[in-house]
Length: 194
Image 1 (spheres, helix red, strand yellow):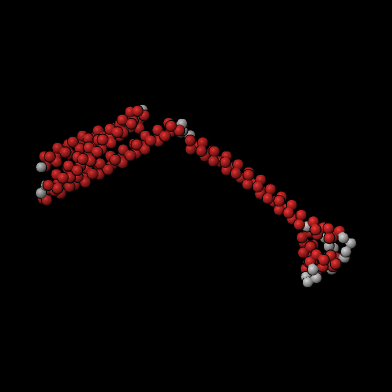
Image 2: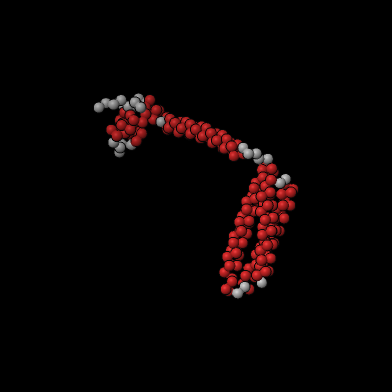
């Protein structure tokens, strides 16, 4: 039985060498050949997995006294198979990145172009924000000045300060407090008589 295992080992070694060689060539091939090479490598990886399964079955049939050495070899082959699959995935990713770049017309400067575009949009957004804030400030100032128009009308009347304050706010308020508020809010509406 160990002769069968050794035969599988040789087949596995040859197959993995071919796969390694093809994986290294995938990123450098023209698009049509890349598709064929990827399909070919996928088939060979499946064959290698089948060989590993056959080798594993052979190891299980070996007597327990000699099985340890073959089990160690199997672990090594399984690790090699995992490395081949990882390398193939990386090769395919590089291949798919190239295909995507070809389809989208991207060149090597795409990240720089995206960054410049992002900076331009950020500046435009900041300018728009400043304009909106200025417009809001104007609206607030306009609203405040319109709210004081009835007060200006009352002040122009020939009433005494106390009389128009009572008219505006009612008689229940502290006139001194209201006079202070008017002095602060409108500048110099009422003369300070203290």
